[in-house]
Image (cartoon, rainbow, N blue to C red; front, side, top):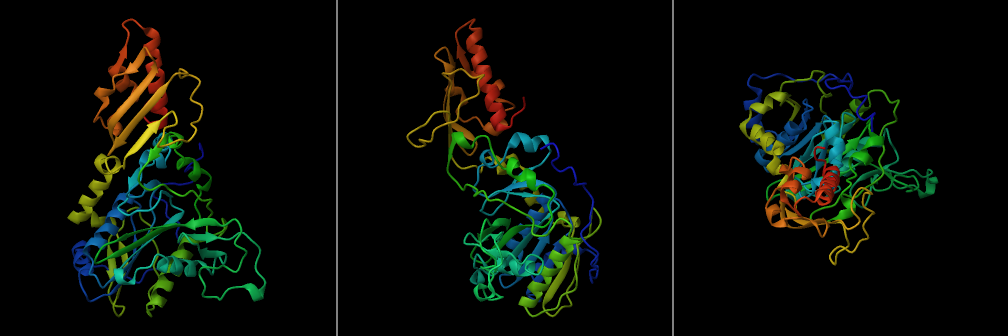
Length: 436
């Protein structure tokens, strides 16, 4: 893990040399706000120039909320390193919080469902916002697979609507599927590795399908460690659990301009689907970029969406919400933590740390990050006053050590009991990613 993100230099852009054919407008943010509500352009293709995940997710949400019901938007963007969890997931269960804190990687709860993903500069995110009457879960996974096929013929859409890369031998000609079949690759479907996953959001007027695509990430070796929580053996949770899958990049490591090739192929495939020829687009080369776009493509608008969209009030408000502790933590569904098997969760628990008393018992239930009930003790003489923990928010603890030390009911002068409570608190701090 010491090499995590070692090869990523913030502000570096090496995504190709494609030259956009785009006109710049004054007051582009105001114009964009009017544009997405206009019926003049039914189709839109935009590359988001910022690497700020809070901004990119908020632009996406703004388009979802404000665009006309008949329109279809394709957004492509790359985020700085971050862990993104689904709308109904438990952040304590979905990531190793101590590790991501040590590497200054933010964890963000998005507004759609689905599982947890890791973003970095070698991962391109695609987002399609379109009429719900046209929605199917595979529609745009198939489009992205079609765009990948010239560079990675082993790709296909699996039964979970993910894009995977088959590792088997090429099938004999008589057994190969039709060229336009995006659900079979023409290779034996052995040990498939995932390169793209998706999440969805539906309303009465809009459908959102967004997904990831691993192009040339330098951090594949770290993803599993980042997304493996030490709390998993002890927690029974409501909400959505991520399905863990082996992953790989869609492009070989020596492929030049891989991201540029992928973006060009996706844009061309999208344009071809809607019978339009679009100008070449590439991600801007600057750390900051401005919003600029062209509406001259017979019902299509295309271009770049830049950091200046922070000036749009709803986008700025959306960023503030995503950054808030309330959004990240208090949306967490109910869960129970227990060091021993229970009727509701009969799994055998792992052996506790050797530093903990053999009689240690820790059990509590939380909803919306608040403790509803608790039973914590190291021995009959080292017991935490659980009543004083009720309604406390776990995310607001500086450390379990501070909280449990204040709430313990130890016999006066019992150094052993105080030490036991301290050991339990230290162990919980490690699991929950709190300060030492």
